[in-house]
Amino acid sequence: MGVVVDSITGSIVAMVTPMQSDGAIDWDRLDALVDWHVEMGTDGIVPVGTTGESATVTPAEHCEIVKRVVGRVAGRVPVIAGTGANATEEAVFLTREAKEAGVDACLLVTPYYNKPTQEGLVRHYDYIASAVDVPIVLYNVPGRTACDMLPETVARLADVANIIGIKEATGDLGRSLKIQELCGDRVVVYSGDDETAVDLMLDGAKGTISVTANVAPKLMGEVCRAAVAGKADEVRTLNQRLMLLHQRLFLEANPIPVKWALVQMGKIEDGIRLPLTELSAAYHEPVREALREAGAIN
Image 1 (cartoon, rainbow, N blue to C red):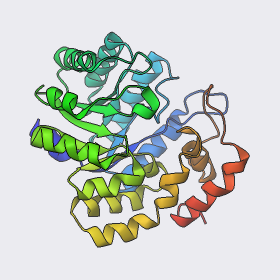
Image 2: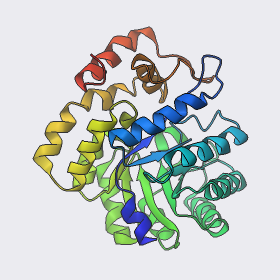
Image 3: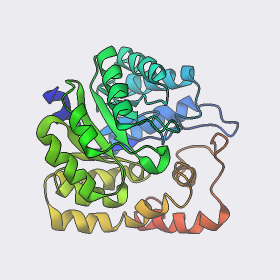
Image 4: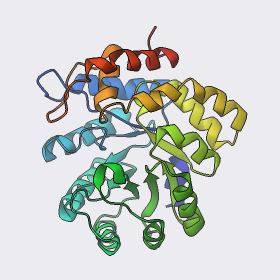
């Protein structure tokens, strides 16, 4: 698994799923987004993660999006498919389908709503890893799932051969450092919080699975590569141009602001699925200001 781990670093976009105004998947825009990310220097692509509205696409759509992205990427950058679910067997199904599509790894969010115990989390991930021989990245985002995977639990799962990493999205740098301390080189830590990602990468994380990268892929790639290389002064200067985006893309629930931003950039149509809705008018100018600061729009 070491080769896989070493190949997935830097700016990994948690890519939105383009939709038409009626909510249908916009396959042409999906292809165009993939090409744009590769051209702009994005280091990896996550289709149908939580930013990709995995909660509201159908299982058939989910699998088709993964296949489409893998085919379009054509080996140019790693693809990490979002395959998490709050039902273990559903997660196995999605993970197996992603493996057959040819992904490099799978990203599995902790089961949401169920509130499993730490023992339940160990059994959930161990079961999936045993059922599907594909590199697995854990994903902890308790603010969205109401389930917090503790560092000690990550350390237990680090002994499973094909669990290779974790996306840590608490924004708690101490938490991520504790995971690195307990796990050593058995798992790779990725940031899942854009605002604190630079600090975490300077402290040893290998990259970030990013919302901001959706709208500023070139600059985000430069920031991440500098951070992973330990260039602290350079990366903080670059990252300052992105800080408003890191903050304002979460003024409403993700991916509402980032999809609205991409509409303003002409990258996607104004499509999002209920119960999510278009960004509230009060936030339009703050998000535009952040886009201008990052050079994403004039």
